[in-house]
Length: 322
Image (cartoon, rainbow, N blue to C red):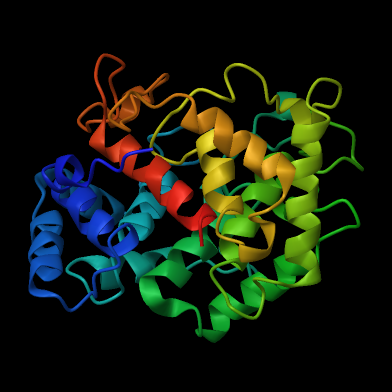
């Protein structure tokens, strides 16, 4: 498949910046890379996110699938490559780390309805479908060696069962638990735990990482019959959608392809080939589904190829060949 690199380099600054780093292998200190990074940091859309996150928690977390929630915007900044010393980031990081649980994971403001066995009141708590994302973002910002971050990661790693991570939220959420059998693994929790672990060299080939990866790949292999916690891997799962918010083929393959020891697994290769089949003759990709909360970005339309989505797809293909 052709790599439309010239087209990508003409895209939004963040696309050009990440393409130079991840597809062309250019050094971070290269003048043209620094130029693209500076343009990215000056993008009004990015500045709006930074300004919004300075008010963390901004809003309570009622649904982990809410694509516009500040939690997902925090992860988006991390994926773009922002660091702890970039403008506005010190305050955001300080606010995010203000609420650690005694056990280590950082908490978010939630309100779980009594209908779902919650208290119906605002409470600082964490769940395996949000705590790993905060830790992942902090690691990407450059805080992987911070003792508070390590404490949170170590605690969550300790919650890994023989079939991966289950829905085991913090005590503050009462009897709340996702819609599945207690002993089933939560696919989304496994996905975002893997994002976190692959970001730390000592965990990238750990028993916990291998267990979580096998859990996701087994879900794919058994997708016609097994749907733990109502996470399906059918038609909607296979639609290309950005940014990386939820449990879909782009997010799953992006995460699993980061593990070098997984790149020959036939189950992962099958997912990657499904993605390849969606390219146009020029190697570009058009979104098949969108998150309307991100309407100002090029990947939130289904009429023409998206440089942002194309970048995300090709960096997966690039990893799979190394």
